[in-house]
Image (cartoon, rainbow, N blue to C red; front, top):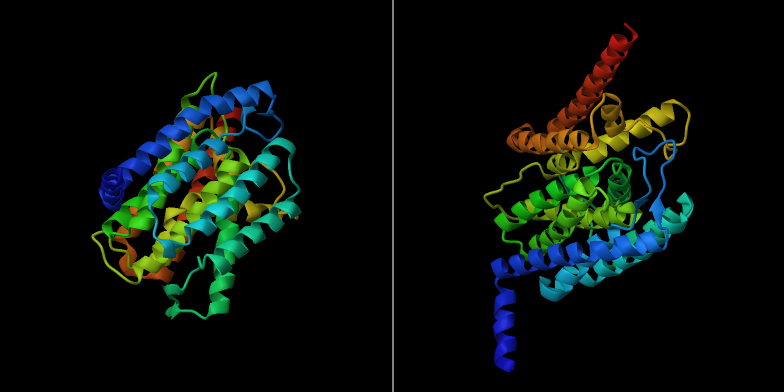
Length: 367
């Protein structure tokens, strides 16, 4: 038996073997848990019911985040073999808090103030206990290393923004999960090129747990389900941890996937969720409304009004995000600041193009 234990440890210590095991386990754990989740949701009448601002028209189970959580956590705990200095226990503890808060919100709804209180608790655990924080601005405005206090403030701000913008983009089938698959895949390629085993396995665990949900969410007819706040918040927390590690590793080592403008590339990787949140909040503030009030000014809402289907809308935005990542990668020579400004103008151009197309459609209909 001791020999078997040693053989298993040798397999787990091999990065390629660990990647396969984590991917396989996260995928099939998530896949096999979804029918159970669907059955419980139906038997307990736990649905996201259509209302005036949603884009679906049937009662849909909304506990898909459980599958993402279970797939990720079980695969990482069983086969991740993450080094002790990574702070995995703090990440898992934070995800467990998110898991229970998300489920309560998906079933009973939680006030915005309570959500932020719990988010700040999670941020405290990750930043002050897990030490997951930005250590450098990567050359933005010529600034590299930053003081501890500034590091904490910037890290907390990024946590709040990314955790919530993943949730806000979750408005049509396959969009949030599809974008998150792209994000996890990009991080996996980067960490593989830099031989960063721990971060690679975290990325693969998230990737594997997302794919089954994406399949059910997009292609499920009678078996469709939503990720709910549980899934969106879990993805957000893991994504922030990965982008922090992405920025830290970019300044220390070089791989064949070379990153020289990490802060700008981080914006590019999360471009659609970040820009969509920025433009929605801007519109609400200009209209003297709360930034957190519900409306239909998201990019996906506008594409739907153009007559596109859910899957067409998601494919366009996911493909656009991927194209922006690729273009940004080859434009890194511009520097962090110039590339960030270019990304902002790209977002404005996208919004203007959609607005003009919508206006043209209305004029055609009136004619």
